[in-house]
Picture 1: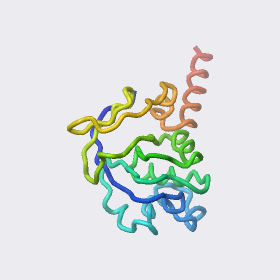
Picture 2 (picture 1 turned 45 degrees about the horizontal axis):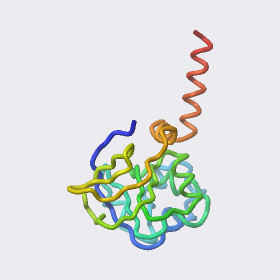
Picture 3 (picture 1 turned 180 degrees about the vertical axis):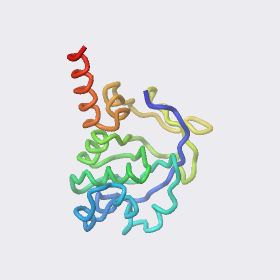
Picture 4 (picture 1 turned 90 degrees about the vertical axis):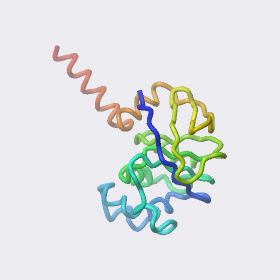
Amino acid sequence: MIEQQNYRVRMITGDISTDDIIPARYKHMYTDPAQLAPHLFENRFPEFFSTLQPRDIIVCKGIFGIGSSREQAVSTLLAAGISMVIAPAFGRIFFRNAWNLGLLAIEVDIEGFCEGLSVECLINEGHFVSETPLANFYPPSEQMLVVIHAGGRLNYILNQLSEQKKQRIL
């Protein structure tokens, strides 16, 4: 369901709050996540956004996404091109928002991950590999992967409604 590809690891240190991801002052300034993206980690890691490349993923050494229930933290990451965040622990609300909006949030022991490392995520099997196996995690359910593939829960529901409508018309 989720295509297998190599990702480039971007390491982040410390516990990361949703205010670290996107400063609160931008919360109501912009409604388009693409306008929020350049402010990603602005206060904590000012040059981070300018160094992002396609297929970058974030690996955090601390707890990721603690703090508020702000969905803008997740939508900003997605708009910046981040499709996956890996950490030993997540703030519970952030974790739920991530999966609901289509961002893979995977709890795993990050030992062995380092800046710039090319990794492959075998999502269905629950493995990260590089040149050697890196880490194992509980694979997400097929339903969670369907939601991710749809681009989040809202898109999934809209697709389901559209399919139901097509079936009624036929």
